[in-house]
Length: 219
Image 1: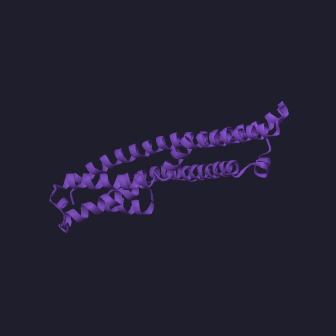
Image 2: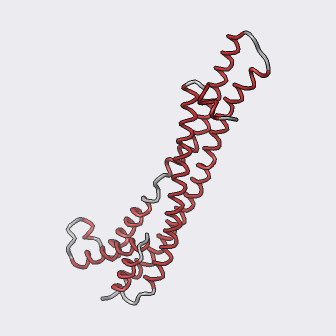
Image 3: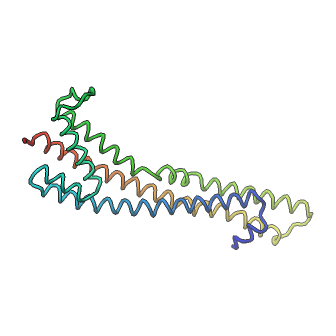
């Protein structure tokens, strides 16, 4: 199949369908590459940060280690230490300052983890949308191409296998292209959803241990 013929001989609707599918495919692979790099980097950084923080002998040492090893875990640690410092300084004026320290720290750690995880949701909506709509966009191109092929045949008054197979074959390629665009998007969405769940579980477990450490730490 020569896609160049589609752009040379196709009508604006069919050309638009192919251009839209191509742009969706480019978007999908950009998201896949960028998110893969980010997930791998976050996993390695979390392992290094966790080891550096828990090997520290004091909270000051843990804070220094967190600053030296940027990662989601480090950010969570710094947010928790800053929250504890604000609480013990007595500088809180909002309603949350009336909470006991353990509940206040739990609240702040949970909010920090949610803020961190929200940054790893980027691109998921695009992958879900592309994976669910690309086959239907390809099908639209196929239906439109077959419709125009049959119209042209009816106008010519002649019908043969050669005249039918060419235009309809080109139209059917639109469905195939739609599937080729949708399948990587669906696979990537499922893969990154699992990655986000694993990262969320890692942060949750670490946050629980950090919370216990902070409320039992005595200056």
